[in-house]
Amino acid sequence: MKLNSLIKYFFRGLLLVVPIVLTAATLIFIFNWLDGMLPMRVRGMGFFIIILGITLIGLLTSKLKLLQPLVRWFEDTLSNLPVVGLLYSSFKELVSGIVGEQQKFTHPVIVRLNAENEVFRIGFITQHDLTHVGIDDLVAVFFPHSYNISGNLYLVPRRNIQSLPTQGAETMRFLMSGGVVELSQKGTEKQNT
Image (tube, rainbow, N blue to C red):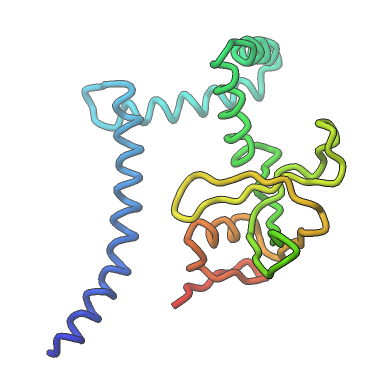
């Protein structure tokens, strides 16, 4: 067997093994972190109790109308505390934008960055109307960073925005992968080689 063939097989193996290992390592880290929050003798019991507890809280606050005023009071109290309120409201909006009823990352767009050249960025409109802060002709567009859980928020003229005929989740995978995953109009994705 030639050295070039061995190197080729090694890189093919990396393409298969590294994403699996990184995914497993991330899931194990999250599991261990949650499980360690409630130290129990039986491994996994803390994780199970936390997941069950979160689900139960969601069920109770959705079904029992008596708890909703208490939840609102608790959230209002947290929101009005200095520093804590800023952190709490920011985290609440982020989580709500990802998994809440009014998800924010569902409208992918391509944005021309300036009129002088042909440079574009792909992002998500997070607010279509900014008139409540005195801005009439701009929209809020979030641009995630590749391989990172962060991004930038720009206020962009509407004329510089063009909607993309893709699904929000597929567009997010495209951006988070650094453009390695190809976009398609049907919502299917292909690996870019």
